[in-house]
Length: 181
Image 1 (tube, rainbow, N blue to C red):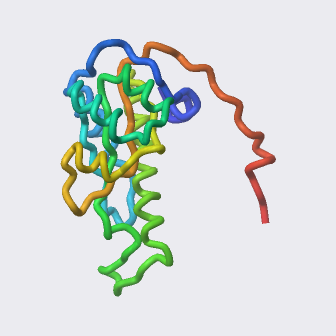
Image 2: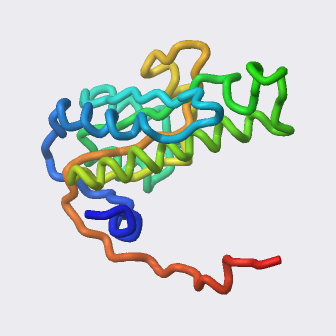
């Protein structure tokens, strides 16, 4: 599978087989995901993988603000990645004279987004489906999984062996999203 196919074929999967993903396979996915680019190579992304049913149930009960789509997906999940990032690193260029971006917090989120997409594409390449959750309670999730104080939650990514093959959703035409100056 080439990169273009991966990008075009990767879907959000919400139904999974009742089978845990072997931890070795998840380590292979993280091995690939760690190559995601980041601001000044700060590599702020961190992955806490949860495959314990009780912890996943607790994430469902306390970590997704009662959002029904997330609750239903978590009920079928056998694995959840808590994507977090180390705060205060992206958006700063200390080694070049202490330059800052006008919005360094934006760059933390940007780097986490790149890491998230890289994780999901790596999982897809390895036959693992993923679904990224944005409606979350980052403080509750942080407490549930015991994140270090210097990290914050960016997203939950449910993963597993797909039990569905979602059809592609419509995309906006290029003319609607492209501008030339």
